[in-house]
Length: 274
Image (cartoon, rainbow, N blue to C red; front, side, top):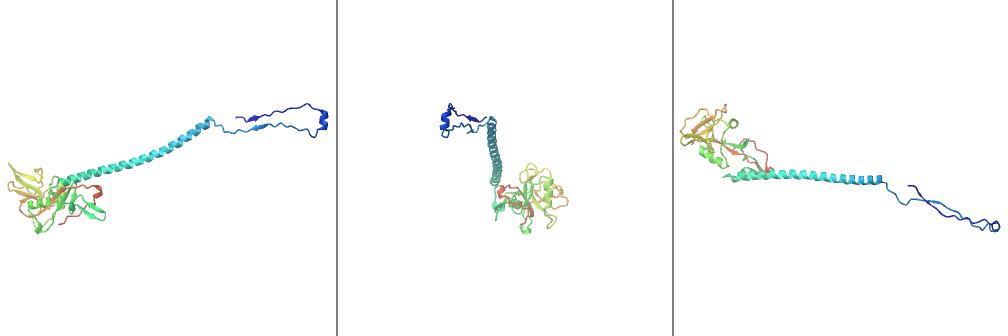
């Protein structure tokens, strides 16, 4: 925009020669001054206004975008914490269900106080985990051996039963942890015995009937026998039927107990002891 101009009026009087001579030195001189008036305000063009608004909007967007990213990060942390608490709650419910449905349960067989607080294992102390089950292989001397019934009662103190073997893999695991002792007639009681109904049936402690056995020699029926698993170079031929009142070692089995994560301790893989 062009600068504004300021104008002033100039008046010229008729020239008088006489007076001019007399009062020449006294006559005033009148000057006319023209000044350029400076602009006192900045006029914003449409382009400038548009750019200013754009910058303000961009700054606001950047600020809100950063805040939104922070909220998303916090949301992810909260979702992870929620998932952890849900899992922990399920674990606690499973643990409680296990305890409630066991006729005999003692927490000190699973949990101990340490410098880091209470720590619990999936299996009772001195038991060995294999898959979803824990096993106890009794290895005491002859004074601690038991009949089939006495062995079953010992297992029940842990909420367990004499071992139920229903797969080749489990039988191989059992054979790996048994050892020869005393004589060829002594082995480890398992949870299989002969029950009489309409016919004699080999029955597990959970009431299921035997489908496949790992016999050394197929026993005769009708003698109310119980079954020992014998240490053998051929794991799939290691079962032997003996009178249930014979005293021998035994194998207990109980399902793995899953504790809430904050109570879990390192698994105990050591061999069981008496």
